[in-house]
Amino acid sequence: MQRQFTAGLLGAAAFLAPLSASAQENSSAEDLGVMSISLKDVVKPTLGFQGALQGAGTPNQAGVGGFLPLSVGDNSVWFVDALVNANFADREGDSSIINTDVAGGAVSTSTRVGYRWLNGDRSWMFGLNAGYDSRPITSGDADTGVNVSNKRTAFFQQLAFNAEALSNSWTFNGYGLIPVGDVEQKLNSVYQGGALNTYGFDAGYFITPVLKASAGYYYQHRDQEGVDGSGVLGRLAYEMTSGVTAGVNISYDEAFDTRVSADIKVRFGGASTTAKRKAIQQLPVINALTSTPSNRDVRVHDDFTSSGTKVGWKYAGYIN
Image (tube, rainbow, N blue to C red; front, side, top):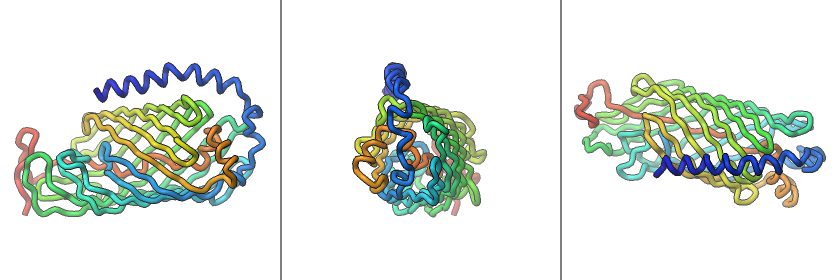
């Protein structure tokens, strides 16, 4: 049913795309009023909260985040975007990292520094950003039926790089997540966890200025975990009102199988007046200048330790 949902999501986007494209392409930049907008009036600090349900190697989480413009030019902005999230326990018997249920109580962080700019007629926004992410993981019980002891907290880190391009119709996003430090650590007496190298590309389409469908490809690997392969994902995001966006995500790869998650982001602040905020909501190119960069989680997969004994799809053997 989940795969049917993905096909339906992408099919709907493909069906509606020509209709939306025709309407948007008939409106020039001048018609939309984008050339008259002063970026210094609309690119302002924002602060709020975000939350997400567990996905493929990512946790249940909620926290606070903010966007801070460092320098705003006539057609460009330098910025910092930072998140701090409390990570909650996995759903019982449904490990986000495959075998070990992740316990709650950890706090993850993510920081991005970036530069975004508009082309001459403001029909496209381009951007580059990079940063650092951290994620502690505390082991809970295993959901494979194996008893585990010596539960530990492991600390994972990564560097992240992102390039983006966006018009009022299309979005393109390429990214790389590169673990650093101790990328492979013991979680308990049976399982060890590894942070995944992940490289991906997403393409999205604005069905309306506030409703976007996207699809993507990613490659992930971690030798110690036996992870080395590709995955696909789909996303549908809706900006319910200015600063409030909800999304549904579905992904499939051999390491995590099919995963469905949802997320929400709320941001306060931004443009100096309510009228300007509403106008910007209808202009994805301008709205994107203050958007929160994506792909902020350290993705982790676990497998049995080198001292364990593999029995079928469950693992036995203990490390004291």
